[in-house]
Amino acid sequence: MLVDRQKDLMRLCKDKGVYKNTAETGWHYLLASGHHTMKFFDFSPGAADADFREIIGREIMQELGRLQLDHEVDVILTPALGGILICSTLQHLFYGKKPLLFYAEKQANGTLSLKRNFDLTEHHRVLAFDDVYTTGRSLELLRKICDERGALVVTQGAVVNRNPRLDQMKPQALAIPNIFLIHYPIEDEFLPEACPACMAGIPLEKDGVIVDNEGKPLESG
Image (cartoon, rainbow, N blue to C red; front, side):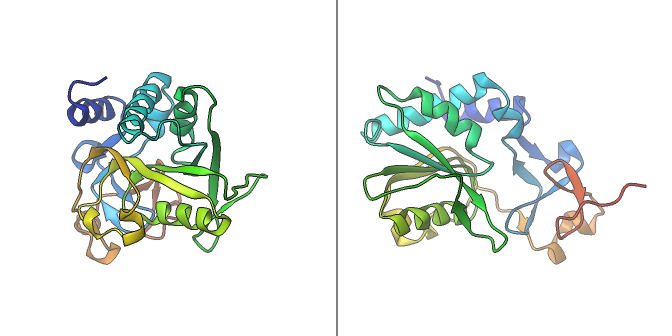
């Protein structure tokens, strides 16, 4: 158990290169929403570390225990690729019978869908989980998948809530217990045409690659 979860996890995220900011890296970042930001969480470096994943997983289990849901979840549902490694580690930390782990894949129209013979039924009780909560769109799409199949989302959340307006979540989302380990509201999200980092000529990064405003890699040379 961490002494001060917020401070200890933020320190760990910085040590593992999960939390990034323009002042230190020299880049700014393209979010899935198309907005630009100068403060960013990228869980890929941390998720590669088994100890990091286990620390995150144990903290999630602690929250599930507090909500008395640690014996209720029989499916963990996450978007690909953000939460897969963390949720895989979490899966092994459950007591007794382990929940199934399904991941939903992004489609060309921006929605999420279940493939690879993953299937949910009205008998499933689901934890919908992501690595970072920004607009809530991914969790909304996960709930939609569950609703269409009659599965019950008993709780949802993410490792980090970076949304400064969490109280504006849709009513159906607020009715579900929410788990966030780190609350780090970030206000500096900009449309490309109003981005001060772009105006200052600071390169834009997505998934470790320098891109244009549409997310297309810039040709080197």
